Image (tube, rainbow, N blue to C red; front, side, top):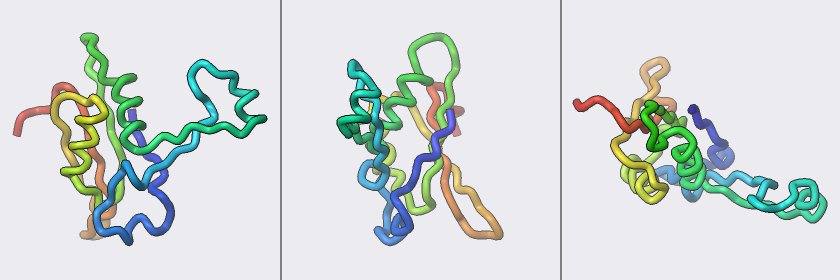
Length: 122
């Protein structure tokens, strides 16, 4: 599964180190156990942050079955890897993850974090 959520507007790069928990907010009008049409009429929304998004995706892809799931999270170049690791643990993602820098014309533009139960040892 490939996640490429909105990064929080044009000011995502101004904060220094990017934190997906604080910067990614997705509004959803689907709340479990409620009628979607009724919510749209009443204007009720659920906010999902970047950590919750990672947790939802991990539950869908990195389950405990015998299948090998892979989750890729596309984020800005200034994403703090330590904070991302803490978010992964608090979101229920077990195992290791790897961060890859995406370079264009010699400059790091973005990173992609890969989460999988069976990442290769270095």
